[in-house]
Length: 183
Image (cartoon, rainbow, N blue to C red; front, side, top):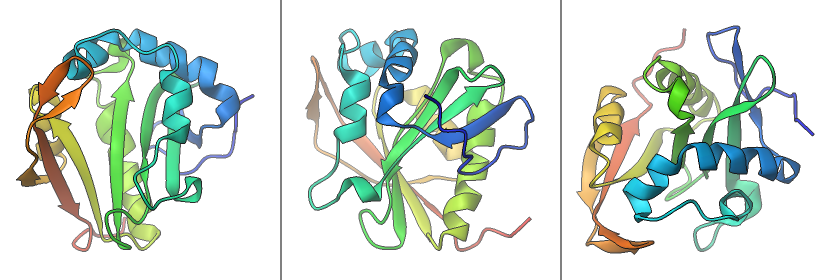
């Protein structure tokens, strides 16, 4: 089952973004398995067999599933080729937190991540969000550079923490949306 209702649109007729539903966990799991390089980089281990089911449930303390967003990037055939996950109104009422932006390996480096985030930034701004925050593990320098290019700035870093079989510092980044102009 695919939820055809677009959440926000990309400036690209070959792709669309929609809210992912739990019924799509199997398709999302395939994406995670295609992105085994990400699991190895962050956790030092293979993709969990229930990674997709877990992402539908994972929440920070004090938040509900109503605060969660999980959007899929789909190609013209309806295949999930990317995912954007996070929480509205976290860590404060005006901020949205991005927990994951992940694209299938064959789609990386073609500007889709930038298109997806540009459209998402505008969507959050229209929803009265004033900032977006996220965390990047220290080893993921490519992601850190991507987020810097997207206008995110380092605001803090955590003490090293356990991610699977690795111990990593997390760089916390923030982008202010109050200076964005409407298109």
